[in-house]
Image (tube, rainbow, N blue to C red; front, side):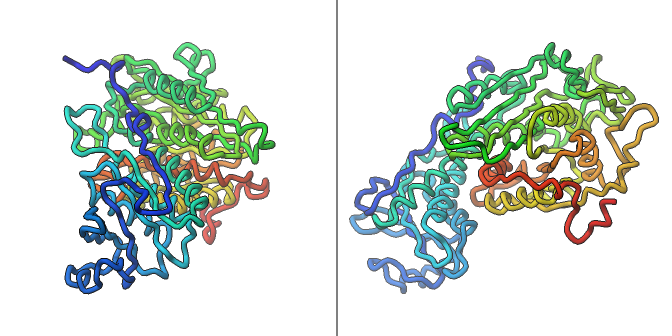
Length: 517
């Protein structure tokens, strides 16, 4: 019997989230396995001699584990966290992932917290929860049997005096990990089961549960609004496009919002390339992940209430597939973007910038302090930075710096690239206001310059996640397949956001300002 899209749950992780708790004694943790973090050169537990560890070759490096029966016969996994004087949240997150993966067959885990000089209890608890929960992710609604049990509970064990700090950190880690798992679910869902209309339904369901305001704009409404970029990309599809607008407003009782941030996500549910058809290769087979930007925005905004975010955030998800057919947009066609600017289409596989242009214009029509878009946009960015680092562009250095700071806290690496306006002339069109392709080189820069044309000078940053949205192999808490990259970065950005100064708009990449002229 074929699975109907209505019977398919695209976000199974949201409904089976792990229970996280904090206790003051290991005796109070009912978990089947206890984890004990050990710094490099650190002392092992009293019941286990240093000679036993040395004989096993365990040194306390991140990525090492040692399984031993503990007091009362309960299995104990010792896991390395690296040198005590250099342990930070990144090391703890990776170490917790190693522990959780070493006990994959167990659904209920507990761990003590390390004693380090550099790491506070709250941050340590957050990192441990994030690492364990994200490492144990699996997407299995289409499998007859899950490969392993999911992580049902995680208990942190530490002295009573530190309990309040640990609970705050654990709760924050739980919400942030939940955002990443949700983004992974959406990106992993097959395009025949998660089209634009279906992701709109998911957004409505999440909105009802989390307090997000959700508006869905259908094909006819988009036509009346003049969203010709989104409709032009959708022209070859049998599935209608959807624009989904999300609004998060902090509780009024907590005072006025700290600022207003607008997020825009590329939501190409499947990208065939359109008339500019992609080769039938391994990359083409991953194109269900071309909505990872929209998935990251939806996931991040779904947890802002739980995190107590004080920033008012608006999100636009621009959702359609990009298919070839007799009605598809052709090379040489001209599209009218929201606001009236015209675009000559010279490559239908440069479609993400077209759908996001409509949203960027809409973002400028409402009060906002800054606009940030995120998209699996260019293979050029993947080739420039590799598969693990996102590219960041922007017209306001203060905003770009906030994006980079959020990426560091989330351990979702990003690197600023120049918004080299000397290349803007390569987007000039003889027929329209702008064309959607530049020359053969600098493709990531051309895409960013195209997007900047639609932000009306507002503080804006662009995050190109074409590389880190997909993993060829599992590594620590990053699984094989769709990674959910960007969800925690965006949530962190919203949590820490402060409106960039007007004087910051138009500043350049530090040290290479001449490149932008």
